[in-house]
Length: 79
Image 1: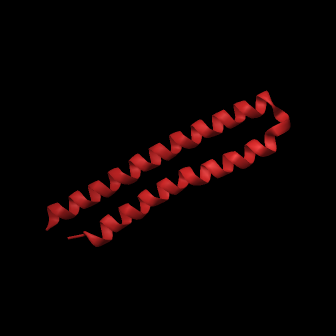
Image 2: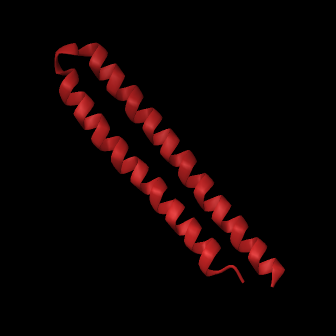
């Protein structure tokens, strides 16, 4: 079934691309706000940095989950 295989690959590509765009936007917004906060109050930069890294880890986790789902789509439903 060639058509089904192509649709699975298309779905996997769309899933990972949307997740990567969302993660990129999320990391950009979080980083921008962290730098803005650090510029306003430089004395708490260590706390801001720790919170930023924690937020980035959780944002990247969603992109990794999308990658896992895409790989499952490709290898489980490859027709």
